Image 1 (tube, rainbow, N blue to C red):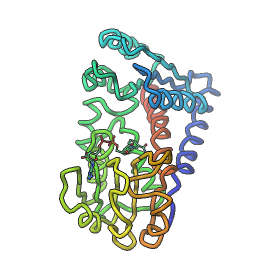
Image 2 (image 1 turned 30 degrees about the vertical axis):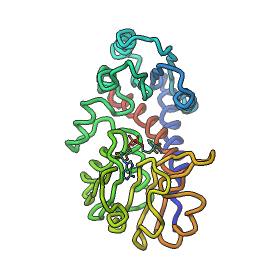
Image 3 (image 1 turned 180 degrees about the vertical axis):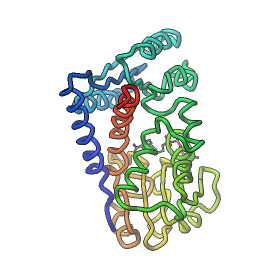
Length: 286
Ligand code: NAD
């Protein structure tokens, strides 16, 4: 079984971005700039935004990190986003989710100018992706497709079983696969006989957030497993299927598999950085 190394693939993407940004700077132009908004003090969200800020800077891009108290009103946040929309020196905007309960998240995400929408979650970007003409793609689905492509795993004509139908991962990934000529079965929490359906998959993608969702015997011989989930069990990260315990059996059964951690996770942040650079390039006609 081939281990699909998301860390290495993400590093290659980031090296390429750093080289392109260095080139931009060498020509005396300002580098791409991302503005990140976090409302509230969830420790996991704080860790995520700090990591995004750090990665952005490490690649030579600029980043503005706005850490706002939970009491920030939706209208105050709206005004800040509006400033960024109108500021020519800002290329991309990200609002860290989840927002506190007193916010209407969909409404706030749609305040971002969709051409500066770093996460690709604006209604316009969702619609364009569904039409097969993506403008900014959501990061995790884009990371999954990049991992498949760079590991020469053909999706065209293959039966892909996608487990999870969230707007963040499952649904957009299913759409991207369909547009790349895969035959897709989309499963969710109400799906009956999940194991039997998984066994039909040439490629199975799990994004349910349920440890031990499937057993290694639930895959056909030679299948590919992309395990997106990040479940913390006894203080350790594991996927919906992949764990140190299941790995030996998966190795006997599968053609290729993403580990957890070190699979899809590192790709998500690399794709965010790619989105920031791509938006910059479109805005500057590069
Ligand atoms: P979500 O809770 O929004 O959606 C989960 C989906 O799984 C739902 O559509 C639900 O119907 C389905 N589901 C739940 N239990 C199921 C079951 N028993 N059988 C079949 N389907 C089931 O979650 P999400 O935001 O899509 O994230 C899913 C997982 O992926 C989580 O573990 C999350 O941490 C992880 N994730 C990882 C990355 C990454 O970068 N690696 C990014 C985003 C999410």
